[in-house]
Amino acid sequence: MNATLRNIFALLVALCLAVPANGDPGGENAGGTGVWILPTCAQVIAPTFDPTQQPRTVKAGIAASADLNMKISSGMGVPTATFVDDLTGLPIPLPVSGRMVTLPAHLMQSLVASPDPNATIVIVDANQVGYVIRVTADPHAGSVVLAVK
Image (cartoon, rainbow, N blue to C red; front, top):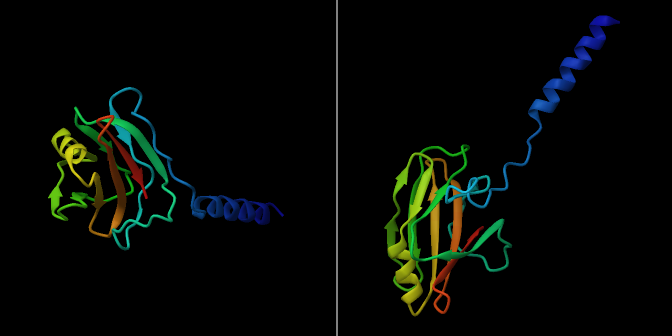
């Protein structure tokens, strides 16, 4: 009887460890450090914007006067990040340092001044795991809204 109970207990523990769990939903600014913690990464199949898809998280009212640092999930490998504005379609590499991706202020300012104030940030690793982030600028407020898709 004891051996059976131990086996059942071991099976339950193994089952609990094998069940996938939801990741961290992200956070505002990592406890006041000015870093935006992105939610759990996901498989990036096609880095396109689907207007019907609801964003997983949104960060609004970002001042275009300072760089924005984004901390990526630990579930990713070594990331590469690109910024593509809708007007030109040219990919611009973003600075990556470890788990931090920086959106420079000059890119946000140029987006605010652009006739088409929309862009997409794609952050992926070698396994195509990462983020597609839609960037929309508000020229009147001089701020930017980021939506993780």
